[in-house]
Length: 143
Image (cartoon, rainbow, N blue to C red):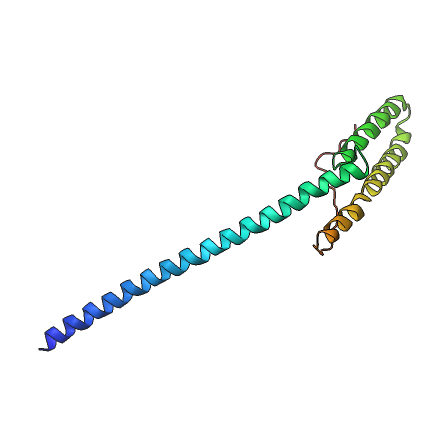
């Protein structure tokens, strides 16, 4: 008799563990499904905002883009390279580098005015955030 009760207890314990595993899998599936739906909704909303924002930036001032800072710096680099090639004395190299860094810094500060335009566009869309632009310089060579 006690062996039968023990077998029934083990059967119910195993059945309970299987039920818990099935319940866990269902919960995991539900949570992941909701997460991916929310992520898609978020991505779609901000994708639309970005596309409208870029179009509006283009309509405000044609030719403005995130690429303008790069193009401006590239033009500055060619102008500075011409000046560098004309230098005779090694003692002029340090002042040349200081002038070059100042010119690059002024260009980047000038191009950061774009962040105010983007912040206004985001506010217009009902997105309130502290938007800041930063430039990442991955390569800067001085010969």
